Length: 215
Image (cartoon, rainbow, N blue to C red; front, side):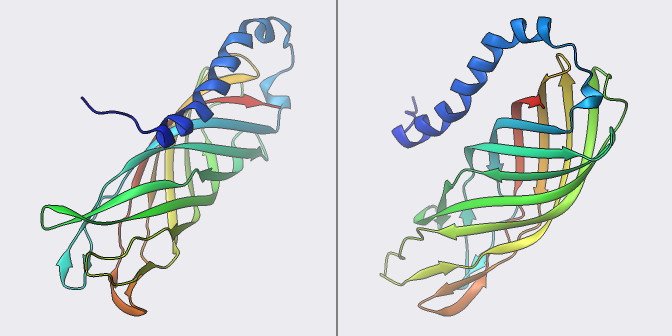
């Protein structure tokens, strides 16, 4: 049986506690909220996502595999119209185990953030609102561990396009639930002792759920 680390428990709590509070106060808020969703231009979503790389890069002539991990996320969207919006999105830093030859050879922390244009189908009063998005992201890497031989490893910031598909389930004019998937096109140089040794082309998929509110 696997044990959740204290660090991961803390990350999960950052999302679950606010989400539980939101659900607890939601019934009273629903009864009092008479404002139309179309009049609310800003939405905030607290969520939790699983990040899973889709590629296994070759580094220094060795095929590697980066493990995925779950992390809390936060998204803020400005709704220009009922259908068009701009989202700023970020994930908490998460660790990735690096494997090669059947065993662990290192680890690295990653933190992605993005800005995307989004289009929502339907109207602000629709119960179910699918949406799509396209934008730009950067993923910062730090806390890279040295190789077993003691070599220094560095991964440069990844930059590229991000595509999003998702759906909002409206509970009231203020509250909604969300499920989404994001694909990050990410390619960055990997250096060993300051010399390029490969490309960390991971192209991760990020699957998330969350609770949102409009203001």
